Image (cartoon, rainbow, N blue to C red; front, side, top):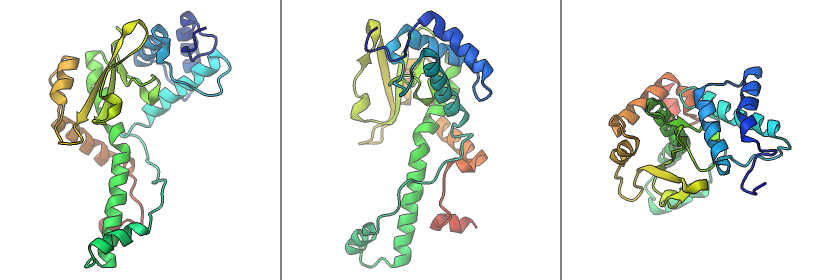
Length: 246
């Protein structure tokens, strides 16, 4: 077996049927065309399967794969309750800011800290919001979301095996194309240039072959998602800006 194949007892002919049986027998899982498509593309290019730890059999791997996919879909931003920020504030930040801006009083410093913490919460879900927006819009164009990182370094695929990785901001990770078996290229796109703020929706529309993807559409989606599910954005009870809402 090739070292690039990450699923034990790999048998492409059995994986789909095994997955369907497991998904239909497990209440927290589901089985539909998008799940089948993503899994089928992985079977065609096994290098796309993610590395899953402590899997000693094909069935165990498939169960964990389905759990990643289904859990991520069920906890997408429009449905999820976000967890608290996993770090505590560093008091020295106040010292740095007050040393540079000595006229700031403790109340102003607390507002800055609160705003920073709130911004961190928003940044934590931005990538997931972008993924959900694209998953909703691209489905009608034959692109399926690999929810829960169920494809290695790939976020969307088509039945024909076209691959797409998306990022919110430009960075070194998606600056060039990479390939998988048979020379299939992973196409890459980022929403915004981190240096100058230029947005690249036109390029994505061209790549997909559509015209409806836009910053305005994304903004409207985000506003609707957060308005209908405020729990998607975690706000600490002690946050200054939360207290203004009470």
